Image (cartoon, rainbow, N blue to C red; front, side, top):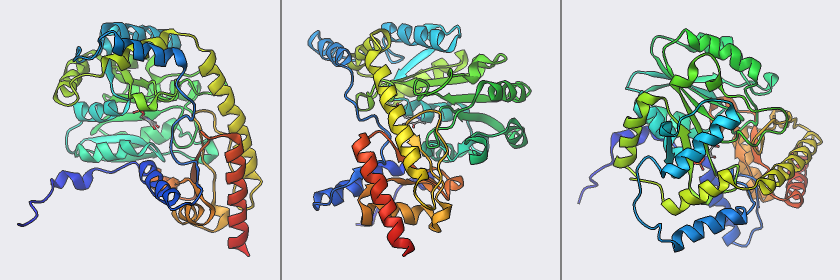
Length: 392
Ligand SMILES: Cc1ncc(COP(=O)(O)O)c(C=O)c1O
């Protein structure tokens, strides 16, 4: 029989290279090759015990059924309370929706706001799912370059230049994947001034909001009256080492709550209630373990940046947040993809090419330092060795 064929729209759907590199690294491991994993963006810590216990207890208590599509009221309240306190904003629980991870809300945020032909401004290099879902929705991706000289930020003028009457959505991400850069308060003030005069939605991806090493997190939603058109996205994956639980949430502008709830009903129906109750424990419970995670990440960040800067041909700016280093590798004379491939094949170190995060990522690698200091030091030594051999 002839191949019945696939939907043409799938040609526009991208992917997240981290999962592909992880699969290749695992294949090599299965062949007996030791690999140091600096590719995947997830904390290597175990979820704090009180959170695991809350989830397990919820299952034992019978929370094994469907539940309300927008999320359990108790979690929506906890999220609203947390966002209000942490961001200094009045967020009502009925604006909060819950999903299995923050990712579905990137998808739904774009689907709910953009038609074919609309333009979406998004950071590049940036989380690859932005460009993928913009294209899939039939909208036009308009990259906003993040430049190393500005600490991987952009200038408000760069944003202003890209706004057109067709701009429907602006995606911001702070602290950022893959660069570790942030949008500081002063820049948000300027961005807000630019956006105040333009009628578009904003999606502020703040899943690393609590992995900020100096200073206070600042959200665009707190400026001008932008809260009313900002999707403020956060989740449990990064802050609480809960990537495998799949739990995210967002505060939506009022007009988007019902349409996005419909998207939830048409797709995953609801988020597992026991997982949601674990999320309540996360947001309302003790923070000593998550504070310790952050301090450990800080130690690793300092080590990885210092180590990278000692390797000839590589320079690395100090990331302000998240758990990624984004070294400039142009001095090695190699393209990002070639160096990433060779590091995996010849040195047993799995990293991502900057180009996995968009065209403006050429000349860079992304290293996730969510691995032990010992492994980080071994990876840096293997990288230095490979580059020495390549230069000889
Ligand atoms: C910038 C950014 N946004 C969103 C996500 C999605 O996180 P999750 O779906 O695990 O909540 C990630 C995960 O890597 C990310 O880096």
